[in-house]
Length: 217
Image (tube, rainbow, N blue to C red):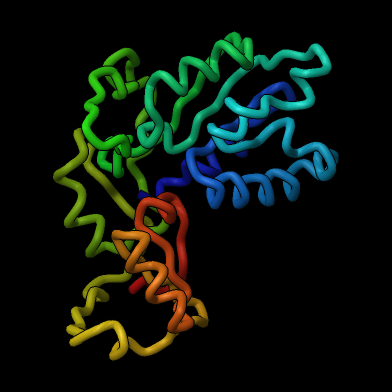
């Protein structure tokens, strides 16, 4: 977490790459950063960054006009069904594929009741070529807790420690509204809907993977 995956992609991005994200929030954030680092793409960014589903359903004008992509980059790749990634590779006609993700992040979730998936895990047919094990975001406390879950361990640039605080709330109405610089995370969409009505700045954990805020509740 916080190891600079997005910055890594931006640094390695070249014209001719297509970057896909599993969530709209992730695609929007990357598109904004891409337009900043490549001002020439201001009016053309959708040819270079989309959500996975948007690309599979709508393609891009670049492809519709007869173009191809040299490389397909999928961020938060472990959240995506392997079949969707392989289909995106076929549609993009990319010669190379780079997948970036966290082995311990929330994986692909099958949302079809009564059906199970067997071939959803992209790690079963790929190999890890590079580890990004140094975090620029996580505190010393968090890095210490999480390090044992990664084969290469985890280090951090932060000197912050003992920052985690536990508060107990009786119900959602007792949670103070803290919009400024604060993001509230919940597990379910129903919980998110309730808190949005009360004025909270809230997302599900699934939606907010890979993003950051000064304060997290």
